[in-house]
Length: 386
Image 1 (cartoon, helix red, strand yellow):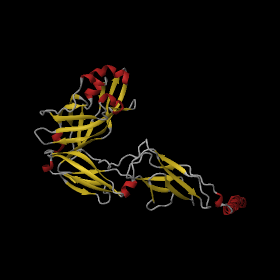
Image 2 (spheres, one colour):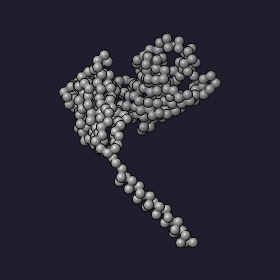
Image 3 (spheres, rainbow, N blue to C red):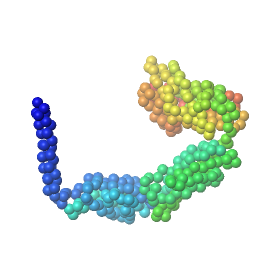
Image 4 (tube, rainbow, N blue to C red):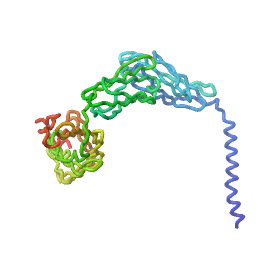
C-alpha cells in the first residue's frame, strides 16, 4: 500500500515537469516581432493651466517605445527618472480659448519588432491662464503659537515650481524638504490682521502670488485649566439665539448640552427625545475639536431619527472679562443619510456648516448672522423639503 501512495504522489510531479517543459519550449519559439501595436488609452489633463507641466501616460507594453508630439506649441519634457517613454510631461506655454484651434497631444508606439502604431491623440480644447496655487490654512489663529500653512502642488508642480513665503508680521520657518509648506509664529504684538503670501515661480519663469488674509487673536491662558470654560453660554448657534451649557471638565475638555437645539426644533420641526453628551476637546493653543459622535434623537411625524454631530472645530478665547467660544459643525441624519446644512445649502445662503458664536454668561454675545423672517417662513415647508 505504501508503494501505491508513492506512485500517486510522483505521477502529478512528472506531469508538471513534462507540461512545464513543453510550455517553455513554446515561449522560446514565440515571435515577438509580430506583435501588433495598439495604444488603447492616453491619460492627461483635460483642462491644463498655462505655465504648468502635466503628466501624460499611454497604455504600455513591454519592449515598446513611445514618441510624443504636440500639434501646437506644447512642449514634451522627458519624465525625470523615467522608467519608460510611455510616460512624459507636457508643458503648456500659451492660453487657449475655446474659440481657438485646440491643442492635440499624440503618441505613437513602436514595438521591439519595429512595428509602429497609428498615433493615439488626446484633444485639449482650452488652456486657462496661470495663477499661483491657493494657500491652505486657518484664517483665525492665536498669538503665541505656531500655525501651519501650505499649498497642494501636484507631483509635477513639486518638480517644476519654486515657492517663496512672505507675511507682513510674524516669523516664518519654511519647510526645507517641502518648500510649499511653512510654519509661522505670532506674538501678542502681532494681534490684528496679516496677509500671508505664497510666490510661485515655474521653471519657465512664470510668476504669480497667492494671498490669504489671517486674523491673529490675542492669547490669554486659562488660569484654572478647562474649569474656566465650564458654565452657561449664550449667543448664536445655527442662526438662532441659543443657550448652551458646558460641564464635567477634565484634563481633555468639557461636555456640551444644547447644541443645535433651537434649529432642530423650530426650523427643522423635530422634537428632541434624547440628547447625548457632546464631548469637546480643549487644546492649550486655543483650539477646540468635537469628534464625530451622537448628538440627539428626534421625533417627527411619529418616526424617530438619529443625528450625529460631525466636523466640529473652533477656538476659545480667554482675553477680556468673559471667555468666548466659536466653533463650526455639521449635523448628520444617520437614519435618512443626509447632512445639515450641506445637503440643503440653498436654504442657508450656501452654508455647508453651522456656526456657534458664544460668550460665557455675563458677557454680550456677538451676532454674526441675523435669523431672518424669510427663514422663519420656511418652517411650514419643512415636510416638503425633507
